Amino acid sequence: MKLTVKPLDNIGVEIQGFDITRPLEEAERQQLIALWHQYGVLVFRNQDITPENQIAFSRHFGPLALHPLKATRSEAYPELFEIESGGDKDKSMTAIYKGQTIVGRLDWHIDLHYTGKPNHGAVLTAVEVAGEGGLTGFGDLAKAYDALDDKTRELIARLEVSYAFSMQRRHMRYVDLDGYEPGPHSPKKPADVKFPDFPESVYPMVMTHPVTGMKVLGIVEQFLDRVITPYKAGLSNDESIELLERLVAHTRDPQFHYFHQWQPGDMVLWDNWRAMHCATGTPPGVRRRINRTTIEGDVQLGRVLLEE
Ligand SMILES: O=C(O)CCC(=O)C(=O)O
Ligand SMILES: [Fe+2]
Picture 1 (tube, rainbow, N blue to C red):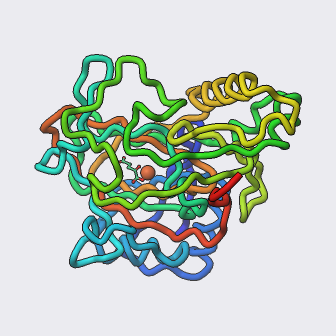
Picture 2: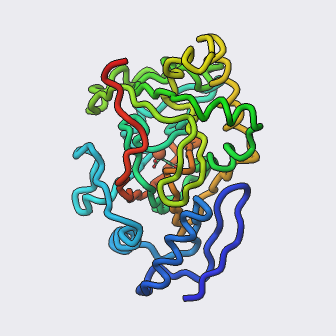
């Protein structure tokens, strides 16, 4: 296969010349791994995808992780995580944003951020494309770092930041809560959706990508909680809060974002050590199904905070 790349908006490339039904030679596998790290997001269109070939494709990038919750695993394919809306599971995923009821909206996040050991990446494939909405957004935190001024870079190189897992969006300090109301069935604590709880996790504000060595801005709005011991870097608590507000606003700048509008036959792979992602959600009743496989993270990027 001769692969060519076509740049997407702001982050990632579409790979052309790829066919998931054909066996991958080792040189092609190495090329895809290199492209994944070089561009952060790879989009493949018009693929003839099955659960088996999605799992086999994903394994080329590393061992796969099973979802921590047995209940959400596909019975036939334990490596496959089925994301579904428009059915009877919607209640807990429904909330009101500026007067509009939306199912499955997710703020910018990094998967498994709250464990201190985010997965390396994931593959999403379109099973049933939403008739309205249902986009997946990707944001380049390496580009966001590069766009900072020298003074900010110098300051944040000395800082660590914590993430506090929570089930209630209104308890998150840096997401946009303007016009937000939880739905009547929104979970209040992890056990409501059979989730375990997690202690805080802490990351350097500037992360170094384990493979490419790229500097990656370690700021993502979901679960973002506080700067650790800001006074050690000469910052008051108020200054540290204002810094996080400024950096979150920076990551929301559309110049770092690509929003994927799903079509049948689409497959998207991203580097979770570099790109944040979000989901726009769908209006109630709109059917949407995505199959997801997860490439395990074999590097501890953060640490779990049990005291301090
Ligand atoms: O539903 C989507 O578009 C993305 C969901 C998501 O955040 C994920 O699969 O990690
Ligand atoms: Fe996610």
